[in-house]
Image (tube, rainbow, N blue to C red; front, side, top):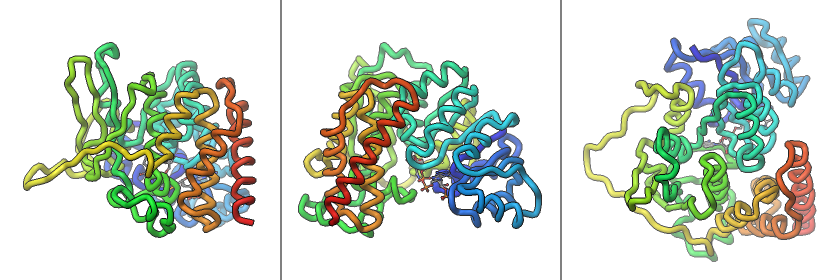
Length: 385
Ligand SMILES: NC(=O)c1ccc[n+]([C@@H]2O[C@H](COP(=O)([O-])OP(=O)(O)OC[C@H]3O[C@@H](n4cnc5c(N)ncnc54)[C@H](OP(=O)(O)O)[C@@H]3O)[C@@H](O)[C@H]2O)c1
């Protein structure tokens, strides 16, 4: 029986994780749940799963939960609350499903404590990949990627001799603007950018899918996770989102991983690894005709992907700078303070202006993150006044 702490339980990955848990009552139990501001949903999740440890964003919401739950769990709040959940003595598996760099410290602490950490929070790996690896080695735990492309690569590479690998490729749906001309993309609205054709996800990652920044972050994540150079990581646009990743071998052949585009599959893969059992997702159906297409991404219409490769090649704090700038720009776009095309301009501005330093410690990375945010905020304000 795996004993879980689920950080980000009220989000898209969090609720899918609870569906997987509900499908495997004899294999998975919930010890701790943590969320941010959605106290109503957290309360109802607590009543269903009865975690012993619960954390929410603020002290006020923790007090509200104390008065509104039918039982009395340990209640925490804020950053310390996330750590209390991740490091709870009964927890052996942590699902890191908080969005953004707010998830960094708890992911690192869980890895250092030797837990199995199922990392959906790709920002942890993008911003502090080497540090997360080091924490995982120091703690003796396991780092398993929840991102569908990376879970696919984990399955394809499991037990493989690294010397036989020529390249890895992750697929991209291409997002809602895949076949739009540049001028139309530049003027895209929030509603258009949130209208993802194949995946239903939280708002930040949905916008990142429209700019292809999400794929850029995933390229960095893949390079870090599998120890491959930037030249060994490729992106192929595949609008049907049925092939999630490919591995190319030195003999010229490829292996592909195929499954339904449902995040419950990679989540279950990480939670039950190495076992594969029937779960909440129906097996892929091969009956009936189907057409898959593959094409190269267009870096002129989707410059965020090129910026991610630039940051990966620069190394050090460059991915952290890009990630922070992008978080600020996407939030400003969602608030109507920036246009869609400004997102890439803001990211480029921060990457070009803030000096890159070698990756040292987590506090140093968080300093780079703060510097990039300050610069990006200043740029957004100058743009909107
Ligand atoms: N969604 C997907 O299909 C998908 C696929 C692959 C990877 N990912 C990655 O998984 C992560 C989560 O994505 P998502 O789509 O699930 O996002 P989401 O739906 O926006 O959910 C984010 C979760 O994080 C919580 N949260 C945010 N800031 C917090 C803070 N400071 N303290 C505590 N909790 C906080 C939110 O709580 P409240 O809602 O209660 O405020 C919510 O539970 C992201 O890194 C994303 O890139 C997502």
